[in-house]
Amino acid sequence: MTFAIIGNGAIAGYVIGALGRRGHSVAAKIVRTAPAPEGPVAPVRVTSVADLPESVRHVIDCAGHPGLVAHGERVLRAGLDLTTLSLGALADPALADALSRAAEAGQSRLFPACGAIGALDALTAARIGRLDRVTYVGRKPPAGWAGSAAESVLDLAAMGPAPVTHFRGTARAAAVAFPKNANVAAAVALAGLGFDATQVELIADPSAARNIHEIEAEGEFGRFAFRIEGDALPDNPRSSALAAMSAVATAERALSRVVI
Ligand SMILES: NC(=O)C1=CN([C@@H]2O[C@H](COP(=O)(O)OP(=O)(O)OC[C@H]3O[C@@H](n4cnc5c(N)ncnc54)[C@H](OP(=O)(O)O)[C@@H]3O)[C@@H](O)[C@H]2O)C=CC1
Ligand SMILES: O=C([O-])CC(=O)C(=O)O
Image 1 (cartoon, rainbow, N blue to C red):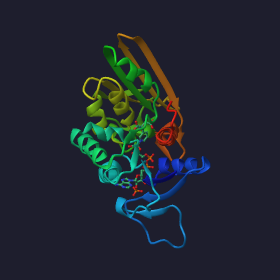
Image 2 (image 1 turned 135 degrees about the vertical axis):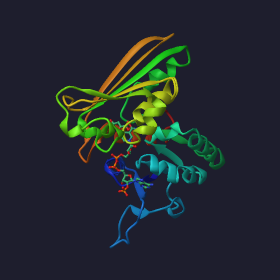
Image 3 (image 1 turned 30 degrees about the vertical axis):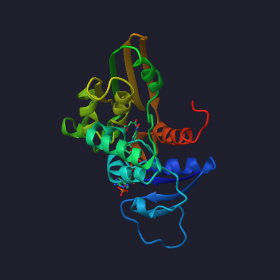
Image 4 (image 1 turned 90 degrees about the vertical axis):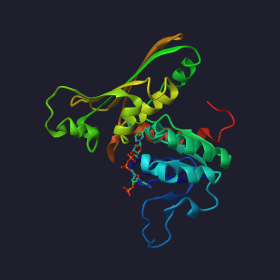
């Protein structure tokens, strides 16, 4: 299968390497500004969907909300399947609707990846019955919140040893306020009770060595609690390695005849 990637950052780098090791080809990257190539370079860098090589069948968005907003509709309308990690962008109903209509028009499909969290299969099953309560708690070391809205309520560099909750609210508010940090909150919302009924808490924790994500859910099925401690990618303390792995797994699942 031939892929294109949106983005050129930490997750894009991991995804391109993993796809290559797994026998796939990455023909192009969609970037913001494509420098003139100095020689034969693969994957080729383009700035628009229209310039993608014809061999591309599936695009993986690793660029965050701006990448999905800029290119998602055109990818789907062109008949290419799209895996995205920018789940928080779907908190905007206009974008979610536009992507859905573009997929319909292009006879293509949008695959939101689970990203840095797990247990979403249990949530999607649980909501078939009555789902009463879903909460998500995201905990990262202070460096994991750098450049985010946490900085408006907290001096990350001068924190004492105690963890500080810097956000409490709905998954929709979290997704909008933390585009680089709350895609997991959006994933939990999409799998379970939706953006407005899913409660979120975000914590900067100097004693956390990893990015820790916890879900608690209760309903007709019973109750579950899930916790994952994800190592960050070496190039970006905000982004868990599992998110990049999940993009590859989701894109591969889209190709499978037996879907697990
Ligand atoms: N679902 C999940 O669990 C997770 C989701 N994410 C999402 O993935 C995003 C990327 O993470 P990561 O790779 O670590 O971040 P990086 O900051 O390392 O890379 C982001 C890349 O996206 C590029 N980019 C931004 N806007 C556009 C655009 N309009 N078109 C093309 N490229 C664009 C940037 O380009 P430039 O170099 O020009 O700035 C940069 O190369 C995060 O911002 C977050 O939203 C991250 C972790 C977990
Ligand atoms: O990578 C992570 O641990 C989670 C993250 O940034 C996000 O949800 O956007």
